[in-house]
Structures are given as structure tokens and as C-alpha cells.
Amino acid sequence: MADITADITKREREVLEMICNELSAAEIAGKLYLSVRTVEGHRNNLILKTGCRNTAGLVLFAVKAGIFSLDL
Image (cartoon, rainbow, N blue to C red; front, side, top):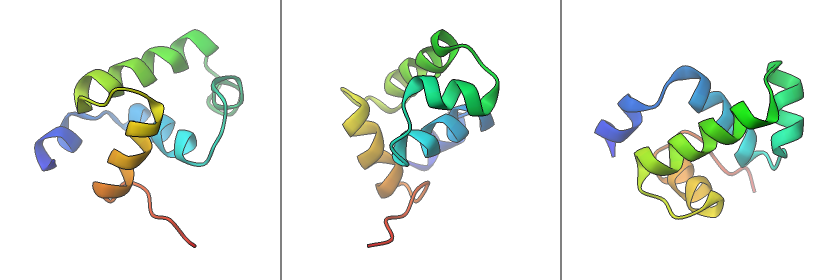
């Protein structure tokens, strides 16, 4: 997992953290001054890099990799 996290860019990490915080692609785009399509591209790159099947898988990956922590 450490090798995979090293391949994730700073921008992809920002997008991943916002996905984990339940922001939509449009909300992420607004906060990062990007187009929705660019945000979707970052999400797709994350899915390819991590081997996840969907956005829910990305959230699980982020928690397991320590990129995002659940404060329950």
C-alpha cells in the first residue's frame, strides 16, 4: 500500500480527501477551482492507481492507507 500512496499526486490526495468528506464532483471543482471533468479525471486516475472498483472503494482505501481517518 505504501507504493501506491507514493504514486498519488498532491492534487489527487486533495480530491480523495474531499471525496471522503462526501463532497460531490461539482463541490470539489468549486473549492479547487477546477472543472467537474478534471475532478472526475482525478477520481478515475485514483481508481486506476489503487485498483479500486468504485468511489466507495476509494474511501475504504483512504481509511486503510491512513490518508483519511474516521472520527466517529
